Amino acid sequence: MPLPFDLSAGAAAILAGIVLLAAFVRGYSGFGFPALVVTSSSLITDPRHMIPVVIISDLVMTVQQWPSIRRHIDWRRALWLSVGAIAGVPLGLWALAGVGADAARALIAGFVLCMCLLLLSGWYLRRRPGDAGHAGAGLVSGIANAAAVGGLPVVVFFAAQGIGAAAFRATLVAYFTFLDIWTVPLMNAAGMVGRDTFIAAALTVPLILVGARAGGKHFLRTSPESFRRFAILLLTCIATLALGKSIL
Image 1 (spheres, rainbow, N blue to C red):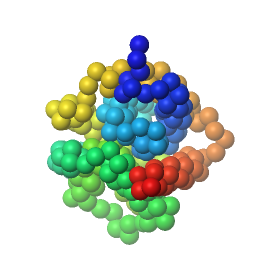
Image 2 (image 1 turned 90 degrees about the vertical axis):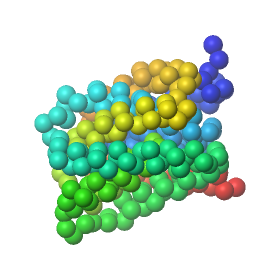
Image 3 (image 1 turned 135 degrees about the vertical axis):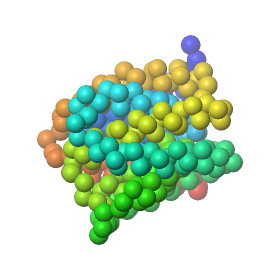
Image 4 (image 1 turned 120 degrees about the horizontal axis):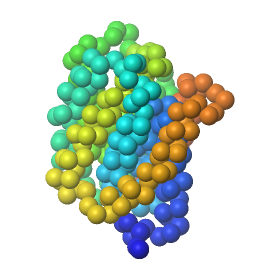
């Protein structure tokens, strides 16, 4: 059977390794799966192929994580983020439809790099944002989720507020659930979802279940905060490479 998106066996094997690592990062830190997969895949293929695949896969992980995070969710934050995302996702899809593969690679890598640099800078909000602030963050997140990197703006937003680790992770997962459910039908309507999308998503499911479960068990001997910093540095390096590839 031919591999989806006309991938070679070598490229498929590399992507499988990327998916497994990204799922571990997501299970342990609560974020990073779509951004890691899409940014890394842009080094070997058109990143637009992987966008709907990782969003469908991300939804599988959110379902897996719900039993362990339900009691820690800040529902008010998740609700207002979702309100903003409702308008943001269609805007992002409209913008993405007008660019080619190289431009998409550059835009995704550049955006991811900017988000990572903000996280590494230690940017902090002096005053807790209200409902409107969360809706605004959701709008930015929704626009970015057209490229499957909608989680990073919310990670930056939460990190700037000093939210506790349990609520940080749980509220992200709750919001991602809505975001993914909202995004997939819109991508299908935009013609981004096809037979190869579902084949690729089905092939990734065993990898993400294993990776996310291992990450969720805190397999590493380090704190979630330390590992989150490692994940951001890893993503920064990958985004820099992808940006370089799109320019050269």
